[in-house]
Image 1 (tube, rainbow, N blue to C red):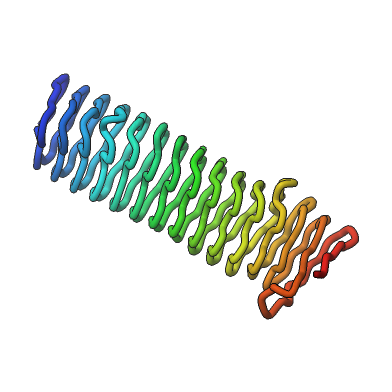
Image 2 (tube, rainbow, N blue to C red):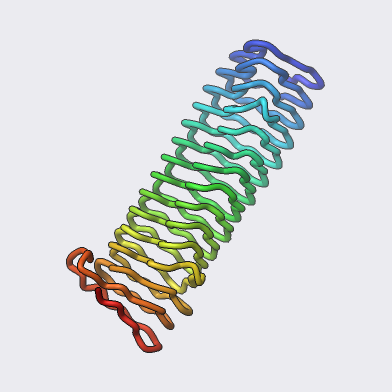
Length: 287
């Protein structure tokens, strides 16, 4: 069934429909416009009311717009593809499975993509994106432009490529994350992470990568504000260029061009055997 150039509002106007194509439809103020639908496509549509896509299966959304009132729009949904779409509403995507997003702008991405599984993102912009992708897993990302703090907390099994991540407290308590050819700007990166791997990345922000287990850095660079790095971490790090300061790494190996200061004090955790190599003379502060 095809529905085109119509406007619906109120409570559950299109509830439970199957095999439906929406073309230039407006889902106006109200709630749950397309709840419990299956095999649905939407092209050139506008969503103004709350919770339009809940408990749905096999959804395709292209060239659409979710206005700010269409908050919490897509929850408990399986197999969704979204392309060339503008999302102005917060709290998109919760408890969803198998999501594919391409060329999507999320201009108010607060608390978006929580508790989701099987996420594929390509060419995505996410603004005001505090706590994006929390408690999610099995994520592949290529070209994400992220502005928002606390990204990816408690998530696991993630691969990110070619991205710009401006996010304080990113990757806290994550597991099995790989970031390749990307820039990560923000304080306190990757605390309490397990198996975080950074490949050809540039990092900025104070006190990065502390309390990390199994941290790997390959051909990365670090900004001047990356001080007091690696406290209580186990790691293998190959860093291009200088590092401002390193404090009490627990174990592993660090190689850098130059380290401004290495702080080893009585609070270091055992085994306290991290090997530190630099191409210029080592300066160690022992307290």
